[in-house]
Length: 135
Image 1 (cartoon, rainbow, N blue to C red):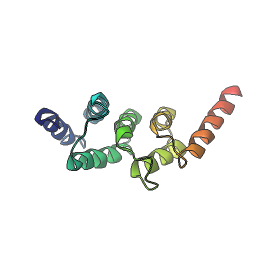
Image 2: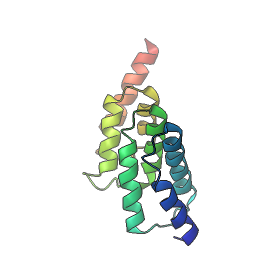
Image 3: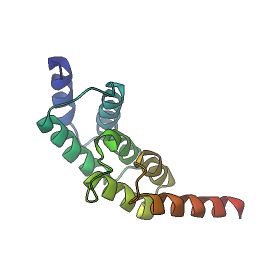
């Protein structure tokens, strides 16, 4: 990872616990955008990945739905579908089931990796949404 990206990630991660919800939202949004704009063959060092991982896992429990949605999107590239105990996937599954905000549940549903572990949750959530829509 080049020095500029490293600096930028460090700068953003210093503000992930800001008191202002707009700052937390923009931090999550920028991390999401940066990770998504990196090519498929791009890599970041393990320490930086762990810091992003830890900070965004905190933000998926934020009190504001917009912040939670951006944190969910930021974690999408850091999930490991082969790991049955992946904390990102576990968070996504929990969010899909219990979050009060439909926007946040939808963000988790759209970003969770398709695997044998997640498929029952995806199908179950899709079925419930379809049934509610028809009614």
